[in-house]
Length: 223
Image 1 (cartoon, rainbow, N blue to C red):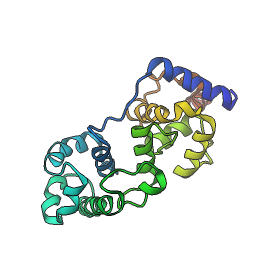
Image 2 (spheres, helix red, strand yellow):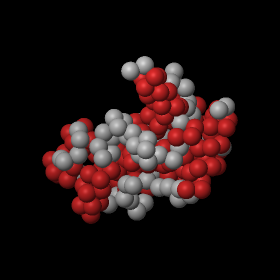
Image 3 (cartoon, rainbow, N blue to C red):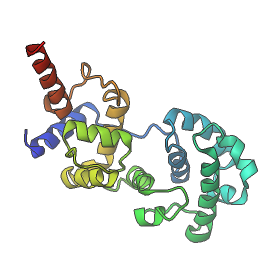
């Protein structure tokens, strides 16, 4: 299957079977989403959603984060991975938002990555989810699934390389939702250690499945 056909099959499948796909992080505005995404680094969305229920009651705006201190904020996120660093990041993030952006969330990747705790992946998430910009955030799920499906070559060894490949081949209008397609498929079907190939509906164009089946056939022929 040619790469063009593989992308067409990918988009057709998810456009038909998952026309609505959204982040599983719970938020009510861009500020809350930004905080939630910062907290979600190497942490599950489920845990983040539990923590932010109380966090947003006490720190509903950037101004509240800017005005707090470590010992006051830390207890609210202590169950999150790397709570020390994330506490410092959130306070710094709040201060920079107030000082440089009038308390508003910037709408470009270049501006977002200036904020403490915000890397390219987080900036891509915010711009694609809030403003539907054609930016592709590459987390571990996107990285794994796109390589297994054959959407990007196995030689794409960094998130940035994978991002560039996906941006190049996915039609612009689908990029922001394709991010969620890949994440959700990786989270619930194409698991890292034990992918649920028997449940997957993408095996007809999946390179990983093709390789696995070929290996099993060879082993069966040479017991």
